[in-house]
Image 1 (cartoon, one colour):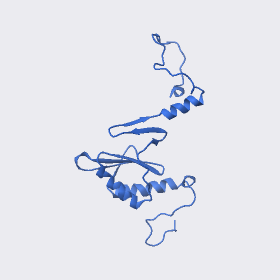
Image 2 (image 1 turned 45 degrees about the vertical axis):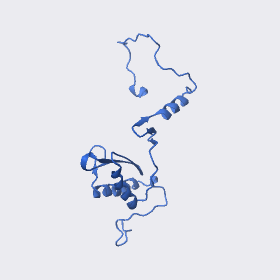
Image 3 (image 1 turned 90 degrees about the horizontal axis):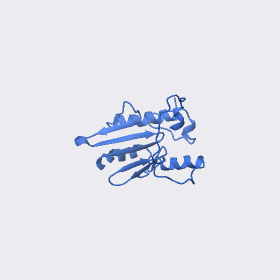
Image 4 (image 1 turned 120 degrees about the vertical axis):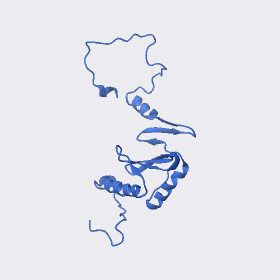
Length: 162
């Protein structure tokens, strides 16, 4: 680009304009962070290019997944987080604590389990169609209803039911 200063080629400029409006910003960010992960012995997943894994002895692992300008991680052993602590020295990062939402999916964690659900998404859909005040049912089918296959029926657009 011609803007590099001698001895500072590995640094990036802080941009005062939002990164999302710049077309090259995501690629530049990803290239920089991918180089860091490769340098620190992470392996990039072949089928999901934004997921990196680092393995240690006795089955210990750290999985990091990137999304836009954030990352989430999981591990078995807490000592694996030392790799992320060194990453905080390399990049301007802040720890937001345990994940609560990711891509509109709610994440509920306790000491033994992790649950993911779309409870809020379901509430938004019900509200959008004016069904948020409807009575709830434990069983959405009428009891003892017999269902039969309509052999001469017309094809239905599957995407309406996803």
